[in-house]
Length: 304
Ligand code: GLN
Figure 1 (cartoon, rainbow, N blue to C red):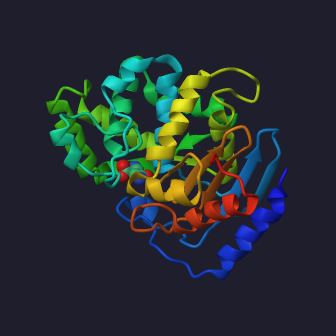
Figure 2: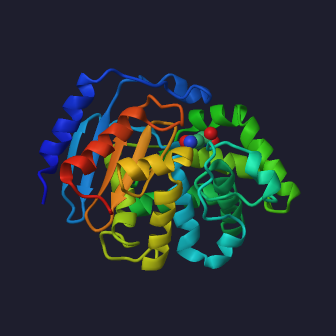
């Protein structure tokens, strides 16, 4: 096994030496106050060993990383009919883009852009009486962390500025691809994005995707084929119009969020989460991307 602690130390000290670039997401008021130069990384191996550096226990807003967890919850009970309502192709557009939705008749390109995650939320609203608490319970179950919670102030502040997401919802509803009230869908989506977790906590949740759909206990949440598909989507669509770049530089399935987190897995080996709030122009953590690139460079191992 590589000396992961030495590798994380190297990543952390190089990060300290680099100039900080990028900006904290400010379009969601609740995220704008986060101290920008925090940096944490946590790696959990398949055999349950934990390695960390920096602010790896600090809670942050997981934002779009929740899109993977929402999809996992739907996939845990539903079959291929999901893919009639949301595609599996990279969008090549920003996470909040509306342009493809009109000419593709309200079917979002994939579940990891906003439009796709909104459809996944709509599906969950049809499957559960109280999807907000059931989703939280699902995240608690897969992470093994009983006190994971929503950050209500982040959720509320996003709802107040959710004009583009509401535009997508209305457009998709016009095409018949949203079955519930747009207000109910936006409320659930903003709650899901507002979940607070640490790098450490998220590596536990993402162990599901490292372990081919099984929890540490051996319980199967996703079949091996469903876990394969979610990892494939992270590989091709996890970073919006920077997904090719992440695949090229890092070579792991992963997912970013505008809170500055990036979760990734090396199936059968480890799950890893890097967090640093300053985002590059594509909305992905600048220092987080560098950290994960170094990780696969220094270990000499990716999925390729
Ligand atoms: N809640 C955010 C939004 O809808 C999530 C975006 C992201 O993390 N990329 O804008």
